[in-house]
Length: 74
Image (cartoon, rainbow, N blue to C red; front, side, top):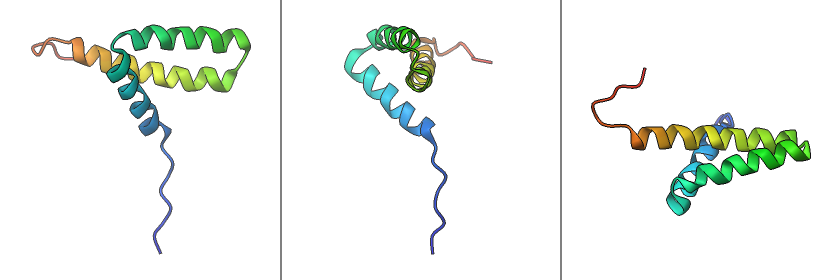
């Protein structure tokens, strides 16, 4: 019998980030920022945490795509 795999939400946050960037470009970062502000204002800790993870993936992907080839991230 196959062992159940551990659930990794980061995989799904990455998919969401990729789709947002594909559909909205860098404007996706603006919308993610707005979502963070809204979740914080509503006191929605779970929503804030979800959007914070999505925002992290967005910024990592955006930074990677705008980085010149000769620049090394440390």
